[in-house]
Image (tube, rainbow, N blue to C red):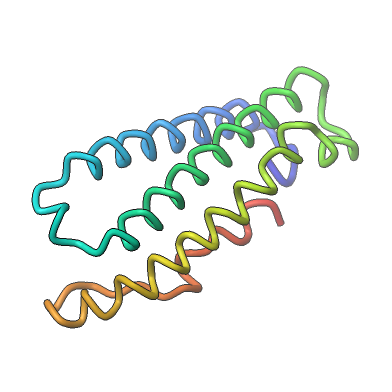
Length: 127
């Protein structure tokens, strides 16, 4: 998206697939075996983060589609789809950080993979 290159159509599809994948993860999380054994706040933070991330991906797909329809120019960064992604992007980042803070002690206790707050941030998508 950043360079307004020839892959705009692919960019839009990539964001749409990402949103769909997050929705699929949300449905799997809702039916996760042993879900009741996990801290409620951990599940809530992960759910919030994935919901917000799915919204960001949907908004960015709309931005890519708008950019294709109107042509790429310097005003594409003021597109409504792009602007709409800002608030859920912040929510997603906050939710991922909150999840990581709760997940890491659980993961260490059971020898599972931990996550860093830096790696859970989607920064760079719009830069």
